[in-house]
Length: 284
Image (cartoon, rainbow, N blue to C red; front, side, top):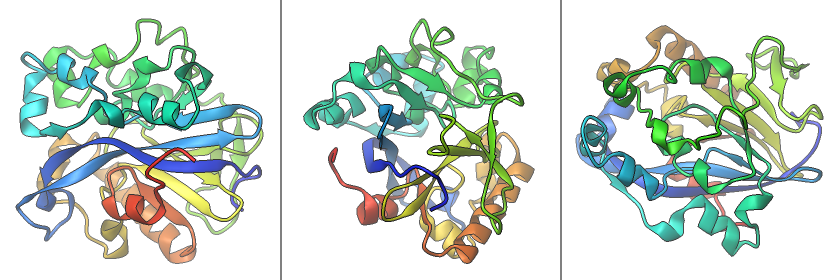
């Protein structure tokens, strides 16, 4: 095990967007394909249900009803049904929204934070510089950065537990292209690593169940084919990246992890293949 405390894990999605495959995978099709807005439910033996991102919610459509945010919806059309929301899925599995104590936010794009208002007791864990990169942007620049501030609750700052250079770290096993990780709960169960590039301060999460190790890598790639076949996105995708250099660096890290630890289950947030292979489709 990469982590020290095994957890339960359900891989789910709340809605999807349509985007030409070519932009996300060099040599891909020009036809729009569906990219699910994936998130994870982690069942911790002590802290109970924890979310890694949330996917979309109906609030996304209200927040993109007028310009400039309407451009977000037009450029990246979203398909979503209310019964797909993270809150609804958890309730179907016997978990009320108020039971969720922590939500780990990989980054602040709308397809990752769309459902956070549905969890009134949750505290938010994220890399401080991820929020700093978007929190002071005006409407036009925020839209370009994929950030819709109205998706966050009014008391977001009061409920935040941001990670920074003073946060607890834990060494990772030798052989990984990371030497240490943020120890989110202090018990070695959730180990976060920075994977900036797609977005400033984006984090991925190492978690282990009793059977498998996982790396929830957020948007380091959009599909598993990318790191398996060494196919980076089209150069035009760089226009929405926070840093092309950091993206390339972390893309290579992902490739190395896959080669060195082939049994590790790497889960990109928008990968239909990973969700089909390892997702449960419901809360278990």
